Image (cartoon, rainbow, N blue to C red; front, side):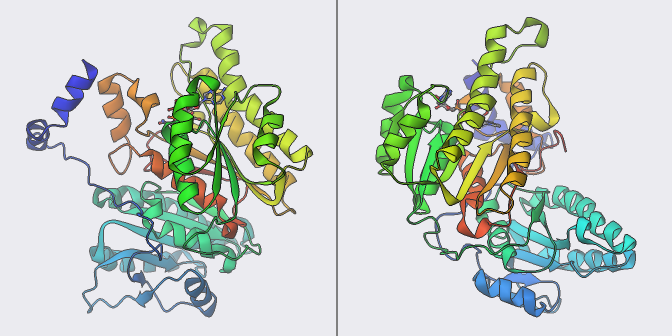
Length: 439
Ligand code: NAD
């Protein structure tokens, strides 16, 4: 029944009726199709770049042009370096620039503002100005969402090479469903980045890889060049094998909560070390707290939080992670905003964020990084279970007015997996089209 209402709703006649009632259909977003360079066409710059920014743009293969209001240039990406702003009046430059330049950006384009991390500001007013960039970015992302355009903020301690990979990512269609986000880039010496096959030679393990988001992550990491080991429960073995066969990967049918899971992972690795570990396997067992059985509580906390912590700790202790390992957890905006009937799920997902932040501190002076993705409403079998009207509201409650796709989450994972992402550590990146939940 729910599926029938949905087909009617999305039929030509249904959409025409909705348009007449003032409900516009969402704009189709452009998603990355594997072409290089990542950024499509010329990036418009607000001002002449500093020599440090020129170096970053060159390393990222980004072609750029300084904005000239007399030149009619359509572009897919706009970049503003606001890291030198010191006074409140400096912010006016944003107003003047964007009121002109935003007419030049195409549908589903990408805007990035670079700011100085407020923690690194010595001057009081400068710290306020840098935080003002956050409010500006979030609001402007809501305005530009109507055009399918994303707007994000990169905070850094200085314009340096650690920005290369995150900047290239956020200006590209890899970031089609990420908007309104401040992302903190720590100074570091990222490893060299091959833009065509950035994960060539890497070994990745993806849990819950048989279907949904996990299968998309496995595909994306494989397209980026990694050898993927997909892990899923024995009951999903057939689907898992089919998914892994598509990408010449290795299927490992074992439960993440199994006492022997790390031994099984060791056998699949055949002496190699793990470069990328993605904890995607997860379940929901929704009930309001007074109706929730102990079984539902324990099962959710165990699969979503306890087991991934245990596996990461054991693999690290057994030295099965490479020196530059990238560990990525899938959290959820439910863990940020909370949700009725999801005390167990939300607790597990905010627990994931807490674990990632703490482990990142412990790994600060190593080559390893650990981060999390918090997806919003993503179209999968999990969200297919939600009744139609609730689902329709869920998918519309964000600046881009649509649900995300598994590949959007996969691209976020791939960002953290990059060799050049050394400066990203302990972050929780929302892939949610700037959801109103927990905003
Ligand atoms: P899904 O149910 O389609 O896939 C989850 C996979 O995990 C399944 O293949 C399942 O068999 C596997 N799995 C479950 N328990 C396991 C265990 N004990 N050991 C090994 N594998 C196990 O779900 P999805 O929508 O693809 O979600 C993937 C992740 O993204 C989950 O962690 C989920 O909480 C998170 N997430 C999803 C959404 C969304 O909108 N779909 C939003 C936020 C977060």
